Amino acid sequence: MFQQTIRKLVSTMLCLVIALTTCGVNAQSDSDTNDKSKILDSLLNEKLEFYRHLYPEISFLILKGGDELVADMMALDLALGHQPSSMDYEHPTKLREDLMMASANRIVYMLQYRMPSASLFKADTPLGWQEHICVLTINPDAIAADSISATRNLLDLPQDFIQKIPDDLRLQPADYLEFVIDHEIYHCLQSMYVGPQKMSQKEFWGEYNSFLNEQGADVYGLGMHINTRLEVSSFARNILRIRGMALYTADPDHLTCRALQQIFKVPVKDIAEMSAKEIFDTANRIQERLAMSYDEYIQYLASSIQAMKVLGVEDLVTDELRSRIKGVQSDPAQVKELVTNTRRYLSELSCDEIER
Image 1: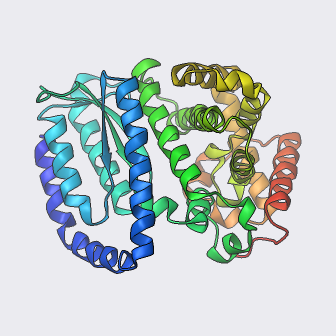
Image 2 (image 1 turned 90 degrees about the vertical axis):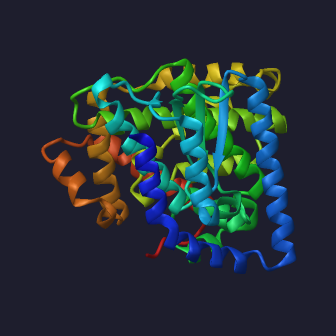
Image 3 (image 1 turned 135 degrees about the vertical axis):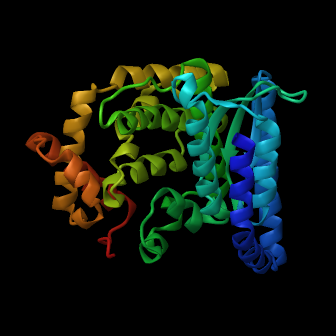
C-alpha cells in the first residue's frame, strides 16, 4: 500500500520536476554558485557521516527535492519497504497505512517547497541497512545559499526587510546549515530515544507537542554550535533574536527564546566538554524543565494572537485558528510580555519597522 502511494505521488510530480530542473540549471550556471554549492554539500555530508558513526543503529537518508524529487521518492520507497511504520506518532495498528500516507504526502510537500524536515520510520524488512530510518529533507542551496537566504529561511519576512538587516546580524550560510541539520536530527533522536507523540483527543495536542519539541530542537542545535565554536557566537545570539520575532510571522510554536536563554546560561567550558549525546540530554532536560501544561499552552496561544494584534500582524492569523481558539481568554500580563520582547528583538535586529 505504501509503495503504491509513493508511485502515485511520483507520477504526479513529474511535470513539476521538469520545471524545477530548468530553474536548477539556470541557478547553477555561474561557477561561483557551483563552488558554494559544493562546499555546502560537503558540509552536509560531513555532518551526516558524524551522525551515522555516532548512531549506527539509525540510517540517515537525505532528500533534497528540486530536480531530484523523483529520485528522492524512489529512494524512500526502496528504503522503507512495503509496510513501514511511523515512529513519530503513537498509533493503533489499523491506522498505520493512513499515517504512512499522510507522512509520505508531508515529505513530498516539504520537498516541493524545499523546506527542512525530519521523520523517523521503522522499515519493513530492510535490505541490509538499519531498521530505523531518519528521513531528512534538507536542500543546502535552497536554505543557505547566502546570508540573505539563510536569514529569510528562518525569518519568513519580506525580502526588503531581510536585505536591510546588517550583515553581521544575518545568519551566515555554513553556520545556519549546520544548525538546521542538528535541529532536524534532534527530532529523529527524540522519537527514537524519548518516544513518539502520544495519542490524545485534545484539540491542540499536535500544536502543543510541536511547541514543546521545537524548544528542545533549537536548544540542541545551538548547543552543538557552541560545542564546536567554543563560544556564544554572534550567530547564536542572532538565532535568539530571530526566534524572538516569531510572532511577526504568526509562528508562536517557534518562539523558543526562554529555552535558548537557558543554554546560554550553561558555561561554554561545560558545553565544550560535552559529547553530542550529552548535549541531547541537556536539551531534553531544559525542555522538560520549561514545559508548560496543555492548558497553559492554550492560553499562551490566545495571548499570542492578542499580541499579534497589538503588533499589527493580526491578518496573518488564520480564520481556522481564530475559530478554534474562540472563547479562550488571553492573559494581559503575558500579552504585554510577548509584545515587549518581540519589539525588543526587532529593535536589536533592525531599526526598521516591518512593511508587508
